[in-house]
Length: 104
Image (cartoon, rainbow, N blue to C red):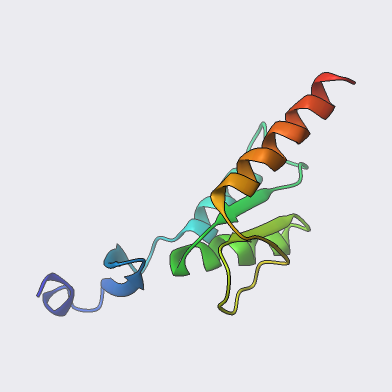
């Protein structure tokens, strides 16, 4: 009802066992773009990890900034160039990256 009565300002998106409502003027991609144009992120490489439809905007933005878009979960089309099957794989990868950076 809120979406219907918003005059097009809100949109309804399917999510994992739920529905997301968000303003059409805001998404995760816009957040990534804003961060990447601000210190301390300016000139850095974004890494965006996500697992649902609302993350696709973030993947698109990470790709535009020559970053890394990583989808978590099996199946489904995605703009992400990389994929992990489960959250445990993401945690393992992050631990390995942190260890490698600590060893520099």
